[in-house]
Length: 33
Image 1 (cartoon, rainbow, N blue to C red):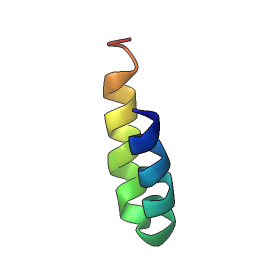
Image 2 (image 1 turned 120 degrees about the horizontal axis):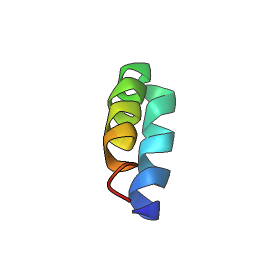
Image 3 (image 1 turned 180 degrees about the horizontal axis):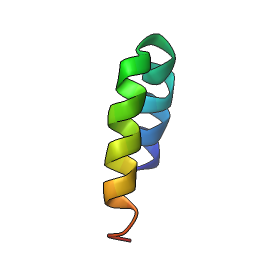
Image 4 (image 1 turned 90 degrees about the vertical axis):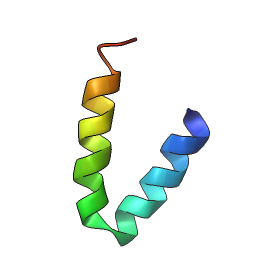
């Protein structure tokens, strides 16, 4: 999970649009924890 987060973090810098996807994914995954 950490590796995935690290990868997405770098990807967000190149693709701002991905940031929204990651944010939505994180928001949906947070309650599961």
